[in-house]
Amino acid sequence: MTFNRHLGLALSGAMALALPAAADTELTMYYPIAVGGDLTVVVDKMIADFEAANPDISVTAIYSGNYDDTRVRALSALASGEPAQLAVMFSIDAYDLIEQELIVPFEEVATSDEDKAWLKSFYPALMANSLIEGQTWGIPFQRSTIVAYYNKDMFRAAGLDPEAPPTTWDELVSMGKALTQGDTYGLMIPSTGYPYWMFQALAIQNGKELMAGDGLTTYFDDPTVIETLKFWQSLSAEHGIMPTGTVEWGTLRHAFLEGQTAMMWHSTGNLTAVKNNASFDFGVAELPANVRKGSPTGGGNFYLFKDTTEEEKAAALKLMQFMTSPEQAAAWSIATGYMGISPAAYETEALKAYTAEFPPALVARNQLESAVAEFSTFETARVRDGLNNAIQSALTGAKTPEDALTEAQQAAVRLLAAYQ
Image (tube, rainbow, N blue to C red; front, side, top):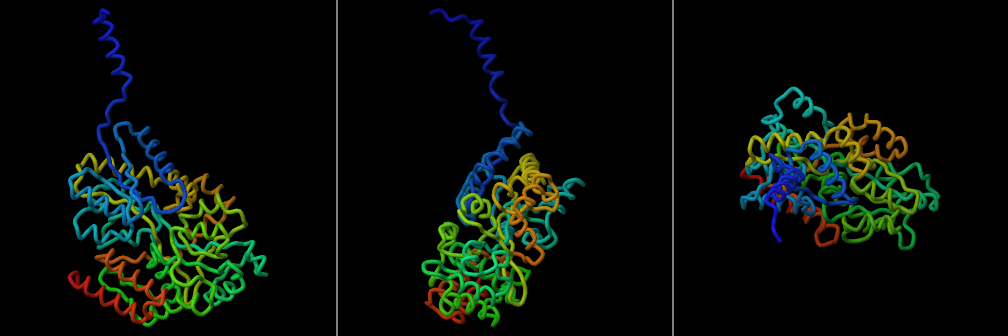
């Protein structure tokens, strides 16, 4: 068969016109998938919408497990020379990332008046882990507080008011006893995955922070902190309202949905999954108080890596501003249960309508009034692991709360000595 040269040229030209132009700037973003909901679908849609509006930028999202997995994978990629410009990682990773000189403060790239206004648009409580020595190192995105989920049907069956969940530790125990029936526990607080997070909430409620705001000082062996761990231990050992040993973070939502517990403490990031899957009437409440109310904030921030070209930094900034815009933050909150990260998100028509129809979506946001920064120090991962181990050893009966927390404090002092 004879090939027509002119036809071939015409076809190749048409094919070239049909192919999309290569993006001028390519971004790689590491992203944690840690809790409930089809998060990859939501993030993929955000990225697709961003790329449609910015055809000169392409974004590859690498979904990399939980927050710890994401940090390891992202930093390993950077160390091996693989391109990565931004990531969503723990808000509490900031000290370590700064110490390793891996990230840049946003004041270096967010320089216009609009950019500066954007930096000031987020809830102050969500910026507490980001503002270090006068500079902004992280941008809130996948953010949460711990909230109390409870089964209203079980409250009714136990003769409790389904609209009056516990507001104090004493009520938590008394209601927990009324709700503990047969194979159902009154309460489950997870003690794997992120036990330090739950413990920080309890310590705050008992009137004591676990750390100073300088990243250098911890208070694990303070008498009030030890008393806090004894209280957590007593929920099973003395009061019998919680299982003995540890409670699994990853399966707790399913345990709640299956009726194994009447109340659970968990991230607001599970809210939409619970809403979509609960076969019973449920409620969401702020955590109960002892000395005071309170929860640590939690979740992930955007970070911008240092080894990035100026063009890539500008593109990454544009992506972050798109994904944190009020409209996108509102859509994200509705789809996942994570909170809207700015007051403007709650002024969008979408989120105003959603929260009017489903008021539990406001609980985590409202709790910001009594929230504190999530536990974070230099050597965060190692200090946190020591605290996690102490909590679990006390809850399983391997050590007394005094011994466990004293050892964790001694280890933290050793780890932080070099930074004093």
